Length: 348
Image (cartoon, rainbow, N blue to C red; front, top):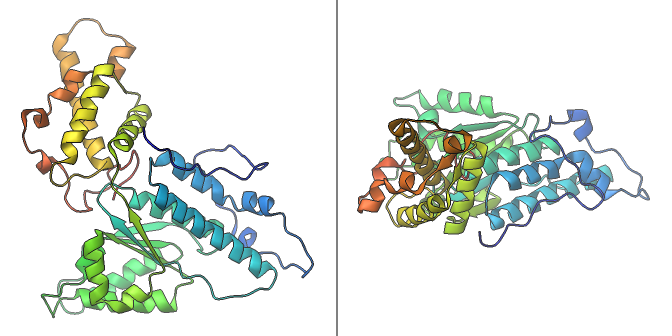
């Protein structure tokens, strides 16, 4: 399956096993203890106590590949943990700027990373709640005078104490329309990102080229983003790994012929318009399940557990892609498509 991503393992001596999602610690536990100048801190104990690496290990289980992205998130988590320890010694410094921009194609894991980042920030005491609010232009921008500001402020109110994830953020600005109300949303966001950055983290997401254009037109927004993280498209081996994760969670498996056919299907789909990475994998497997069910019911007779779990090559090869058709109309456009799975997990 190609190069394996570095695993987010606990430091030696601190390995722990636990449920996929652990309850966040109380806010009092997040406050760094005051230390004397000659005090010595057990760093491994601090890491374990923060439970940050539990979140990163969960992320490693959830998402295939994304080595550069996971590395950057680990670096941010390490910075925040060290900053927390420094505050314990009274080494006060400016709070790290945490607003981010995630760029990449649909289905590359941006929403899942944002969700886990919110957990990390909460566990380290940088966010009061650590929840994720996902929105698009339609949730923020009104359709008439006086409508935009209340909509935007209501969303910001819901996101306070957590992360506000704005998908396809470049649609907030429409250069061709000087009277577009999106500029009002941008101005409110700029004010909140600067004056209330202790209370909320804003993550902008979308295609890289369009986000670059957005920042060129809105330099004030660009200056408030500290972390620009690019999400690469998946390789064919990584897509196959995503498929395995999806099937395993749903108690399906591919036969040998099914595996060969699915790999060929994905190679063809990657060359088609509007390819959506992990989301395209999920959609292809959903259609294979439909064909498997139709095949089983049509054949009749007796079947066993393994028959119900196994997807055959013929269930894959009935795709219109093997007839040379364009199936891009079956995929969501841009970064939309609702709360669909990506990389075996969630959307965007």
